[in-house]
Length: 415
Image (cartoon, rainbow, N blue to C red; front, side, top):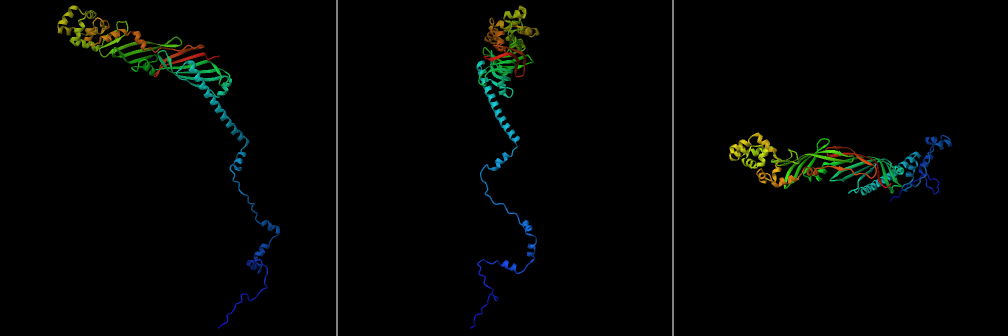
């Protein structure tokens, strides 16, 4: 059996280094030879080497996590003084403007309530105070302009659809915003509209329609119930000024059509009264029954101017009757007869012509003034306690009757 052969790991043993510090093998290798690295590192002085050393990094400091920290304060602090002043002025101007508008709205509301009470209106009017700023005007006790719009003002038998007035250079009798005792109005311009829609509703009971016809005329067309019959109404009204504060209407051309039978015109002239239409007179000439009913009344024969002998022959002979009534002269004369005169004494004759005697009795009481009053569009401006108010002009427009007015030296409230 062989003895194991031992291999000595270090054939040249060195003195034992009793130091406990660990050895760096790279340092031992570097100590064996002086290479080019030492030459490179050894070049230059200590001062030059110190310059080559890299700069040290700044010491680490903990971050700041507080909200609204240095960044926000830094931005505002970085603004120029002029910019800060501009921002402050803008904010101040916004607050002043808001206060001015609030005071304006409050003043308009107070003025509307005051006008409603003093003018006894059903609803508060719209008040618009002009000029800016308002507070400086109030401090000066003078307003540039105030516009007041009042809808549905009662004026006699009709309602004014809209009344608008603008007062200029108003002087206030006040000690502040909440203690305005009155106002003086040196000049006022106004506009009044009497609308056809209101006229149709209030005067015509939705059966008579009013429309403009020229600059000063109004037409009325519709249905007028009389004694249970619906008669077609036609009339014209001429708009005129009455004095300095009122307008009136001159009603003309009033005509009531009873179907195709007759036409009634109120009045005392020869052309007024109840007359047969051309169609009805032609039917009388053609129909024997109607012709005999008409010629059987002596008053009618007298008004027609027909000889009594010719009438007797016509009543006994249909040929003679057709010869008499078929002439153009008879038809023209039949249209001139005022049937109202025959209504009371000869009701049967009217029935023979197709007319209701009760209707004719009602028409006899429907005089021209009564009809004109139904269609009257007149109204008058109220007379102010102080100052003067008058009409400038009256004009008929598409929507209604437009009235321009002016005023001066007016006062509102107590001075």
